[in-house]
Image (tube, rainbow, N blue to C red):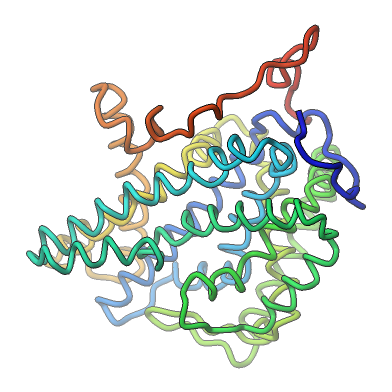
Length: 380
């Protein structure tokens, strides 16, 4: 089924057989990540209009090193399961998939903000055209996943050893390059985490498996990590402002990179621990539907924040930030459920058949072999 020569062996080993199945702890970790991402926008958006800092600003300050790296690292975890697929099939799953949702929601957001609210059709069309080469707003994350998927596949075909790719990507990340191209800036900042997720996936799964068998040591390790991360972020030189957080010693590039990777691993471990608690299943659900939340959370966020401030419903920055966070998470979930029940608008959150590459359907399992999805089970 592989249409290329064998890949250079991953020095970290192969993924466990169960890694290809949907794993609850991964979704739980993604749930933590999406909450932190939405929390950042909720806190900073609120702070921009109130000119003040609330308690959520400090939570976001703590998560600054690893908030986005975690999302990218998790996105790369299962890449090794598809990296050797034929180009058409790979492009459909790892490039076109993200490009579709980016395009749909970029058109919706630009149409609402510039076309309807701003009443500027010409600027709307210009921004829609520009969104193809410059990621629009919060959707940059989805855009970059398509870019990362393409670059990772090209590197795989060129047979560049993973340690070399990671080393070069780490150097770029620590360089802090701010290019005129937003795509290049974000590539430099985050590709290393996506590729680490891909190359170090066997290690991550082994680590999580170990922590699930050693709960007390895992909790102790998380406490040590949280203390170290907090001390380095809030060390002398830090400042928490209404729309940005400046870290202390954690700004030192090698330290920042290390804290990002450690923080991403810590959220994976925390996800593995929380998934055991039945009352936390809502967090796993959020992670499983993180795309639903990510593409749509800005709409309820902006509306609720504006109404709350205009009516004086909530004026204290911390309380308002928390309320905005809750509404921003609940809004997309309610929209998704309503559309599912009504049987309309599925294209907003599910890619239709017309948006798939012809001939990219999953290939049948070899004769006599049970399909992988049917014989794999979750790591415990």
